[in-house]
Image 1: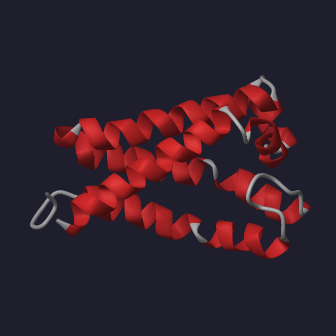
Image 2 (image 1 turned 60 degrees about the vertical axis):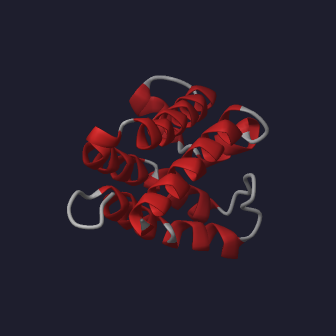
Length: 132
């Protein structure tokens, strides 16, 4: 029961974050994209923000509607959190403000939350006793 609630809460957070990347926060999130990511991916910062937002919405939705694949989706969500870590580090190191991240303290706290998010994704989707 607890894992189910945790999984649904994570799903809701992912969908909400994704929607913010596509709407009100879209412009502000471009600041978190490192220049090297633009070069490596051969695209622009806006496309990276939009793509990550779309991925968050799809991953959050998958957590809700694909119960038979929850463990696999959980691993993918955890991998996504690892993949966006360089953007969080970049934002913290450069001290640039983005939506909801206007202070060095908030940027640092966001950076520290990355590991618990990864653990949350894996724990809440792990099969076994109490996983439903």
